[in-house]
Each structure stands twice: as structure tokens, then as C-alpha cells.
Image (cartoon, rainbow, N blue to C red):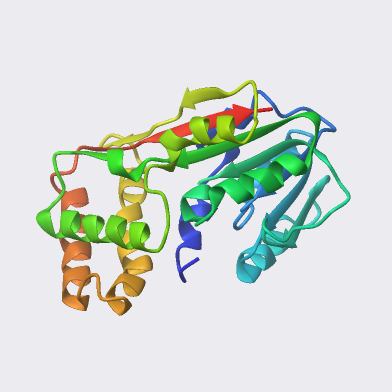
Length: 252
């Protein structure tokens, strides 16, 4: 997680950013939240009465989660990577939101989650297809150039830009059943008080992950700064809407 990107995580809530889970959360069920980040959504699960363990490989994020939500009943956090996570516990529900997009081997991660489910347990994955983002009107050329470089960098390091649309087939190939797909697209418009923050996610990406793109030679520092400036002007002046393509896929 690049420095500063946790601000995006902290704004999220269960009701607005992981509402696909609401129908599954019941008092007393055992839940594992894989890639919980700073714990804002995980906390919401525990407030519904579930017994929740949040894991994330980011030590700083877990320390923040523990500091922010210490004392909430039924909630614990642990520094752990799903690929090496070991526990005797088995879970009624395993959730992983916006995480598989950052894994080079999502199939192995899903198999590990499957092994951690109770008999009849449910897995719920929420993720994007970054190739299907929609802006209106089109963002400035500088941001489109950055965004295309960002997708190219992701592809070259082994991430699946279209993971949302591949999840159901991946689940089927791994032996999951009762597969259900729900549209959870994230739309923000100029009338939304949070428009600048939500649409501004790509300014945040350029300010944080963009440093890696410069280091790896995908863009120059001048291009990165130009993308930030032009895009923030678009948000303030001509930007009307942005839709992120997001699907929830659940299975047993």
C-alpha cells in the first residue's frame, strides 16, 4: 500500500462500500475479512454482531485498525498474508473486497479461502474491471495517458485489470457452487458532496502509486504531475460523473 493511499480506505463503510455483505451478516457468525486494510469496513461487520477477524499483510494498516477500533466486541485484527495464513478456525463467511485485483495469483488465494470455510460456508468477493471505467465528459488527455500507463504497469506485473468479469468463471473452475453475481458499480456525480473525493481517487493513485510508475519507467515525473493537475482541474470545473465497474461474486 503506497504511503497516503490509506486515506481512501478510511472513508469507506460497510453500508456504502461493501453493502453486498449486509444480507449475510448475522449475530454470532464467524467472519474472515481478507485484506481488511485499516479496518473501516471490518468494523462495520462486527457492529452487526458478527465475530470478525481482519487480516492484512500491511503492518501499518493493522496497527491503525487496532488503534482505531480497539474495544469493539467481536473484532480482532492480525498481520497476515492469505497465502500463508494458518488458523484452526473455520468461517461461515469470508469476504475480500478490492483485493484480488492486487494479487498475481488470485486462484491460489481463493483456494486458500475455500479451505478456511465451514461446510456450507460462503465466500463473497468484491472487485473491479478497470478496463470499463466511465468518465463524463472524458478526462483530460494527461490523465488518460497516466491511466493507460497504470493499466499497462498492472498487466506487466501480473495483475488482472478485468478481475471482476473473470471471477464467476474462476469460481466455477475451482469447484465453488451456488455462484451469484451482483452489480455494485460505484457512480459519483457532480451533485454528490463527495464527488471530489470519490472521483479524486485517480489523483490519489497518481500521487501514490504513480511514484512507482515513474520509478519503473512507465511515465515521467513531469507526466505524473501534469496528470494530477489536469485531472484536479477536470474535477473542479468540467467533470460531471465517474462510474467504476464493480461486481460482487458470492459462492459456496
